[in-house]
Image (cartoon, rainbow, N blue to C red):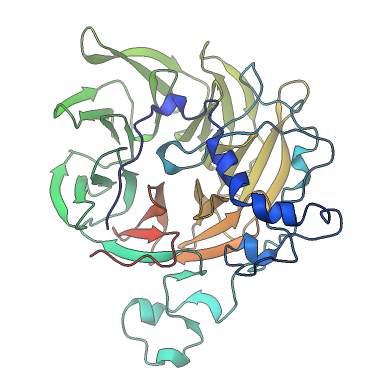
Length: 449
């Protein structure tokens, strides 16, 4: 599991004005688009290209999305922490429709939520329970899947075992050679990225509710506490104040935010003079536990068990809008392009866009057959944006954005609660069985351990 180092940019700069990933995406297709330049109005987008496996040169179909009529999107996309996170709005920091009045006409295009577009239907897409236990007597003749994944654009490299309960947090500090995983078994495990071996097990005194990395810091959400580890100076701090379990952590505008079991969001600011984190604010509004947060374009988005999403101004720390379209727990939120995406146990992923008044409204709803647990956005080996949707049927669906065309599925013995992108086309999943799996977007990748 040979992991290369990445940049060490700060989380609150990940949504800045660096649109290099868009430029790379365009440069990769420049030759093909030139070939098709006189035929865009008549041709269709190559489905094999969307799946990342077209080998025709030249191809009679487009290797790029059809251009929007008379618009300019000015998309801002960054790859900080290897996951999708994007600037979402205009100069005021909010969502805006002025940049691209037709931005919502691609959502769900050519998709069918109940189909497996982009994945060859070789067998029934249900994991063989007997095979997962190592005792299927049908072998290759079994009508169910004998594989942990479906899809030919990514592959499983290795499995890291050691946790005894659900893996609730995965962190890979940029530029470091260690992977950190946290679990409800009360341990944080440290894995050597070159060998895949666990090099340390650290009891943290309680269930790990979440874990993130920021620069040299590892932040761990625990009951009534947030632990902060500086892996450069090998120092540890305990941030008190939370009431109940800390379910979610995020950094934005030089502040560390923690979503807690009592429905509050606590904020700390690091003081270099005292070399410690000092309480900065408490954001009240949710009536039940806060389980997900994301920072984008001067906004903090928080999702809760009260079925709502709250939008907070990062400068004033005031709630400026409450979104109530979900009918069950909002489990995950993230930003992509000029949109907010939210996933809920109500079996939907909702895409929110800005209105002329500056508020957010649902512009597209993607429906699954099961409740959703977490979202993670990243780029595949061709720098195409992908969203991973973990469901409570022990699977993860992978979709192209913005079409929601299916790219593949990942299966597990228990629910996958943690997903984290990594460098060099790697990504990680952690499940309720305590296993951490390492995946690669490169179909030619070979296991290192």
